[in-house]
Image 1 (tube, rainbow, N blue to C red):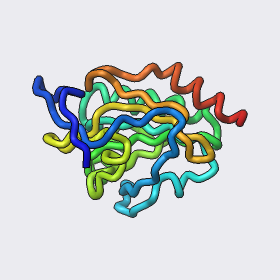
Image 2 (image 1 turned 180 degrees about the horizontal axis):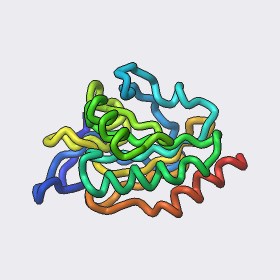
Image 3 (image 1 turned 180 degrees about the vertical axis):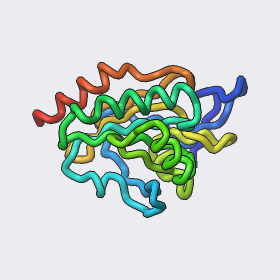
Length: 174
Protein backbone atom coordinates (compact mmCIF):
# COMPACT_ATOMS: atom_id res chain seq x y z
CA UNK A 1 0.00 0.00 0.00
CA UNK A 2 1.20 3.47 -0.87
CA UNK A 3 1.11 5.88 2.06
CA UNK A 4 1.44 9.64 1.54
CA UNK A 5 1.89 12.52 3.98
CA UNK A 6 1.49 16.24 3.44
CA UNK A 7 -1.87 15.80 1.69
CA UNK A 8 -4.35 16.76 4.42
CA UNK A 9 -4.53 17.73 8.08
CA UNK A 10 -6.75 16.30 10.78
CA UNK A 11 -7.11 18.34 13.98
CA UNK A 12 -4.11 20.50 13.01
CA UNK A 13 -1.72 17.61 12.29
CA UNK A 14 -0.58 16.11 9.00
CA UNK A 15 -1.98 12.61 8.53
CA UNK A 16 -1.14 9.84 6.09
CA UNK A 17 -3.41 9.07 3.15
CA UNK A 18 -3.60 5.61 1.62
CA UNK A 19 -3.15 5.36 -2.14
CA UNK A 20 -2.69 7.68 -5.07
CA UNK A 21 -5.33 10.23 -6.06
CA UNK A 22 -7.79 9.13 -8.72
CA UNK A 23 -8.12 11.16 -11.91
CA UNK A 24 -10.94 11.45 -14.41
CA UNK A 25 -10.75 8.87 -17.18
CA UNK A 26 -9.63 5.97 -14.99
CA UNK A 27 -11.69 2.81 -14.73
CA UNK A 28 -13.56 2.84 -11.41
CA UNK A 29 -12.71 0.04 -9.01
CA UNK A 30 -15.64 -1.62 -7.29
CA UNK A 31 -15.65 -1.83 -3.51
CA UNK A 32 -17.65 -3.45 -0.73
CA UNK A 33 -19.58 -1.27 1.70
CA UNK A 34 -22.06 -1.88 4.48
CA UNK A 35 -25.60 -0.53 4.25
CA UNK A 36 -27.51 0.78 7.26
CA UNK A 37 -29.21 -2.62 7.71
CA UNK A 38 -25.69 -4.16 7.98
CA UNK A 39 -26.00 -5.93 4.62
CA UNK A 40 -22.93 -5.87 2.39
CA UNK A 41 -22.97 -4.72 -1.23
CA UNK A 42 -20.45 -4.14 -3.99
CA UNK A 43 -21.42 -0.57 -4.72
CA UNK A 44 -20.71 -0.27 -8.44
CA UNK A 45 -22.32 -3.61 -9.12
CA UNK A 46 -25.38 -2.69 -7.02
CA UNK A 47 -25.82 0.60 -8.93
CA UNK A 48 -24.94 -0.76 -12.39
CA UNK A 49 -26.33 1.19 -15.34
CA UNK A 50 -26.58 4.45 -13.41
CA UNK A 51 -24.48 7.58 -13.12
CA UNK A 52 -23.08 7.60 -9.58
CA UNK A 53 -22.13 10.67 -7.55
CA UNK A 54 -19.99 9.37 -4.69
CA UNK A 55 -19.36 11.80 -1.84
CA UNK A 56 -16.73 10.76 0.69
CA UNK A 57 -17.14 12.45 4.06
CA UNK A 58 -15.26 12.11 7.38
CA UNK A 59 -18.35 11.70 9.62
CA UNK A 60 -22.03 12.53 9.39
CA UNK A 61 -21.80 13.86 12.95
CA UNK A 62 -19.84 16.94 11.87
CA UNK A 63 -21.40 20.20 10.69
CA UNK A 64 -19.82 20.21 7.21
CA UNK A 65 -20.71 16.57 6.50
CA UNK A 66 -24.21 17.21 7.83
CA UNK A 67 -24.68 20.15 5.43
CA UNK A 68 -23.20 18.29 2.47
CA UNK A 69 -25.33 15.18 2.96
CA UNK A 70 -28.51 17.21 3.48
CA UNK A 71 -27.72 19.26 0.36
CA UNK A 72 -27.24 16.15 -1.80
CA UNK A 73 -30.37 14.59 -0.29
CA UNK A 74 -32.38 17.67 -1.29
CA UNK A 75 -30.99 17.56 -4.84
CA UNK A 76 -31.34 13.79 -5.27
CA UNK A 77 -35.09 13.74 -5.80
CA UNK A 78 -34.79 16.12 -8.77
CA UNK A 79 -31.94 14.13 -10.35
CA UNK A 80 -34.12 11.28 -11.61
CA UNK A 81 -33.79 7.51 -11.42
CA UNK A 82 -30.70 7.30 -13.64
CA UNK A 83 -28.45 9.04 -11.10
CA UNK A 84 -27.61 7.61 -7.70
CA UNK A 85 -26.04 9.82 -5.06
CA UNK A 86 -23.97 7.91 -2.51
CA UNK A 87 -22.53 9.34 0.70
CA UNK A 88 -19.84 7.17 2.23
CA UNK A 89 -18.12 7.50 5.59
CA UNK A 90 -16.42 5.33 8.17
CA UNK A 91 -19.35 5.82 10.55
CA UNK A 92 -20.91 2.58 11.75
CA UNK A 93 -24.17 1.63 10.02
CA UNK A 94 -26.31 2.09 13.13
CA UNK A 95 -24.87 5.59 13.62
CA UNK A 96 -25.65 6.36 9.97
CA UNK A 97 -29.19 5.03 10.37
CA UNK A 98 -29.73 7.15 13.50
CA UNK A 99 -28.34 10.27 11.83
CA UNK A 100 -30.34 9.78 8.60
CA UNK A 101 -33.55 9.24 10.57
CA UNK A 102 -33.01 12.37 12.66
CA UNK A 103 -32.02 14.45 9.60
CA UNK A 104 -34.78 13.12 7.34
CA UNK A 105 -32.21 11.95 4.80
CA UNK A 106 -33.87 9.35 2.59
CA UNK A 107 -33.00 10.22 -1.02
CA UNK A 108 -29.28 9.40 -1.00
CA UNK A 109 -27.66 6.04 -0.36
CA UNK A 110 -25.61 6.41 2.84
CA UNK A 111 -23.12 3.57 3.33
CA UNK A 112 -20.21 2.67 5.58
CA UNK A 113 -16.63 1.83 4.61
CA UNK A 114 -15.70 0.89 8.19
CA UNK A 115 -15.38 -2.87 7.75
CA UNK A 116 -13.10 -3.22 4.73
CA UNK A 117 -11.98 0.35 3.93
CA UNK A 118 -11.89 -0.73 0.27
CA UNK A 119 -13.32 2.56 -0.94
CA UNK A 120 -10.84 4.52 1.16
CA UNK A 121 -7.93 2.45 -0.15
CA UNK A 122 -9.04 2.35 -3.80
CA UNK A 123 -9.97 6.03 -4.04
CA UNK A 124 -7.17 7.55 -1.91
CA UNK A 125 -9.60 8.83 0.70
CA UNK A 126 -8.53 6.86 3.77
CA UNK A 127 -6.71 8.98 6.33
CA UNK A 128 -4.77 6.31 8.20
CA UNK A 129 -4.19 7.79 11.66
CA UNK A 130 -7.78 8.76 12.46
CA UNK A 131 -9.16 5.97 10.17
CA UNK A 132 -11.60 8.40 8.59
CA UNK A 133 -12.24 9.37 4.98
CA UNK A 134 -11.12 12.69 3.60
CA UNK A 135 -13.71 14.77 1.77
CA UNK A 136 -13.86 14.05 -1.96
CA UNK A 137 -16.37 13.76 -4.80
CA UNK A 138 -16.33 11.28 -7.67
CA UNK A 139 -18.71 10.86 -10.56
CA UNK A 140 -18.73 7.41 -12.13
CA UNK A 141 -20.55 6.97 -15.44
CA UNK A 142 -22.79 4.09 -16.52
CA UNK A 143 -19.74 2.26 -17.89
CA UNK A 144 -17.78 2.46 -14.61
CA UNK A 145 -15.39 5.16 -15.81
CA UNK A 146 -14.55 7.99 -13.44
CA UNK A 147 -15.62 11.22 -15.14
CA UNK A 148 -15.03 13.62 -12.24
CA UNK A 149 -12.68 13.40 -9.27
CA UNK A 150 -12.09 16.19 -6.81
CA UNK A 151 -10.44 16.08 -3.40
CA UNK A 152 -11.23 18.96 -1.09
CA UNK A 153 -8.07 20.76 0.10
CA UNK A 154 -9.25 20.70 3.73
CA UNK A 155 -11.84 18.71 5.65
CA UNK A 156 -14.01 21.79 6.22
CA UNK A 157 -14.26 22.69 2.50
CA UNK A 158 -17.51 21.72 0.79
CA UNK A 159 -17.67 20.63 -2.84
CA UNK A 160 -18.97 22.88 -5.61
CA UNK A 161 -22.48 21.41 -5.64
CA UNK A 162 -23.59 23.14 -8.84
CA UNK A 163 -20.52 21.89 -10.71
CA UNK A 164 -20.95 18.31 -9.47
CA UNK A 165 -24.65 18.16 -10.31
CA UNK A 166 -24.13 19.72 -13.75
CA UNK A 167 -21.35 17.22 -14.57
CA UNK A 168 -23.55 14.29 -13.55
CA UNK A 169 -26.47 15.53 -15.63
CA UNK A 170 -24.21 15.82 -18.70
CA UNK A 171 -23.37 12.12 -18.39
CA UNK A 172 -27.03 11.16 -18.79
CA UNK A 173 -26.70 12.08 -22.45
CA UNK A 174 -23.95 9.49 -23.04
